[in-house]
Image (tube, rainbow, N blue to C red; front, side, top):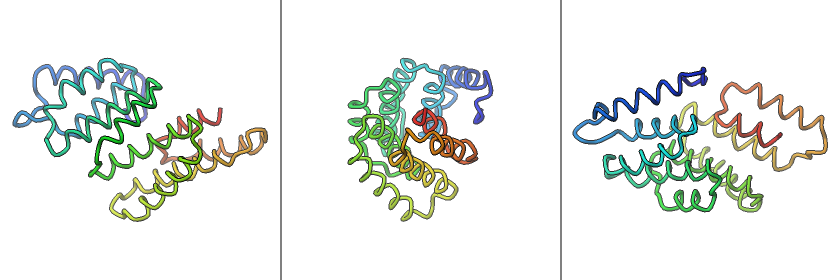
Length: 193
């Protein structure tokens, strides 16, 4: 599934839908934020934005109160981003306090992408510096440090890239394609194209 093998994402989403319909994912009436995030992310990856939004709104009350607003807000922001509704995405991101380090990094990455795509380079420059410091300060994120450090690094490369220099563009594309740990590889390659 992590390698997006044909059909596995749809099959996984179908399994989640079936389990939700039978309340199999609820424990003491609550849905774990991890399952919630996975379900929303898979629905987004297969393009079921309307279903994902309905799922978030329907199951938000089933999240543990402590994580409810941040988890729902992050996933609503992801849907708004996928719809290219950047204003709504940013509003959803700003409404939440991300106590979970990984969700915090996911939110920061989403902001990074929005700032880049809307050519808000001053905001992006400040955001990248802040994100770099955040990654450096939080040593408990393990292998995620490599991934998010690379996202910052390559976004900085994009910001300074001379897109008229075909050799430099191809060199950067090659570096990104060779990365084994880089969750935003597809987005970065899309921004180069």
